[in-house]
Amino acid sequence: MKLKSMTLREMEVLMKELGQPAFRGKQLYTWLHKGARSYDEMTNLPKDLRAVLEEKYPIYAPVAVRRQESKLDGTRKYLWQLEDGNCVETVLMRYHYGNSVCISSEVGCRMGCAFCASTLGGLVRKLEPHEMLDQVLFTQLDSGLPISHIVLMGIGEPLDNLENVLRFLELVNSKEGMNISLRHISLSTCGLVPKIDELARQKLQLTLSVSLHAPNDEIRDTIMPVNRAYPVEELLAACRRYYQATNRRISFEYAMINGVNDAPEHAKELLRRLKGLPAHFNLIPLNHVEESPLKPSTKAAVAKFQKLLEDGGVTATVRRTLGGDIDASCGQLRRKHTKENQ
Image (tube, rainbow, N blue to C red; front, side, top):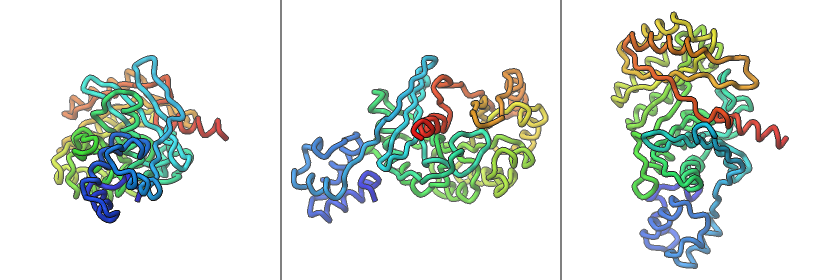
């Protein structure tokens, strides 16, 4: 395991194995979670210990190969190069309640959603816990802006990498580290039902965001292949179980696609299916992906859809479009960078 993916307790055990007092583990943990790029910075650690750690556990900090900042709203997008040369995207967004960072959980994605650029090249590999942590930490350090909220909604399907995601959550939530509250973290999934149940058993106080994007199997099958394994009713049943286990309201993501899922009858069907389930709908104006024929709904259609949901008793908001001038949608910058290098 990479040193930075270790918990504080594991680091204390490691120090004992190296013949050091346990408190050295806390010192090391604190340095790494402050963003130390070299053991030379860790001046309160003995020089001989630093030499051993350098030999056995070399530190690698991600490199920002591209930075883009929106002239429209100040949104920043980073393309981070990892130790093996692969790249992932991170987006920093500013809101009235604080600064939120949207991070990737995998290099690429195997879910195949028709409206997403992240999946076009398939899945390369899953990110390790420290690679998710570094996106938060080094975005904060590079921007100089304190991060208060995290969204796992970048490249990849977080529940397809659940073990590493759970360890990342433990690390980023630790008081000795970045100490970001789980209540300020949202985790997005396209609907892996067994993994939703597994996450529910953890009883974490984060927000589960489900990428629904359609009211029925007929539509969802055409834009989200995962629906063929876990149909809408099965997915919604898992959402009900998640709510019962955690008492946390589900957030549903719904990309508004012109002529596909944005008709009034689709809103009414959603209301019937969601009856009794506390939920919030996040209506997303579709971001155009060059390789996709899908187009965004009109503003009028989005407004009508929102009103129908709210009149039916479901809270619905329209996501503010951020970073539209900097390829801020998932996967776009990484894909552009890959094409240029090819």
